[in-house]
Length: 174
Ligand code: SF4
Image (cartoon, rainbow, N blue to C red):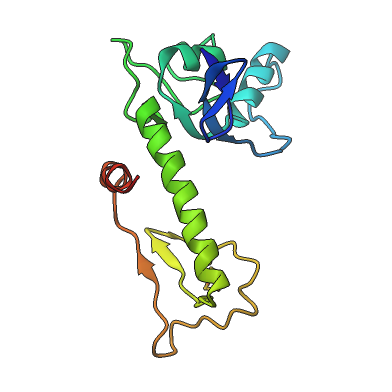
């Protein structure tokens, strides 16, 4: 099995390249708290943990092993962990290969749909809100888009699906 980090299906050296993960790495120089006699290897381990990636991993065990072959419980570098039975923990951010393909197809489809809508003139202000998160939080266009909750007609789309419900919809649409 070849492993690729791209999300779309590709052939590489005559074999199907399977997406391994989409990972986000925060470039940072973390400070580690502790007593003055912390050993360098302990400090380095804590730094690696602090820089752990987030994102979505293909739940295939072979692929996970290729991404991190030293997992003991929770991985220090990718967002997955295994329980004592050897199954992925509930906190793991991982999906099956089939669901990974479904997500990839869904994203491709949505990009095309949104592109066509924009070309057709649909540029309405349409932010989402999910728990405490929302599209406006880090948006660079906040100062110019004109969105204002107090103005009648403006509203936020509430996203209240959990991961399972969202995945079910994606499977049905892709
Ligand atoms: S700040 Fe404006 S442009 Fe940015 S996500 Fe919110 S509504 Fe959209």
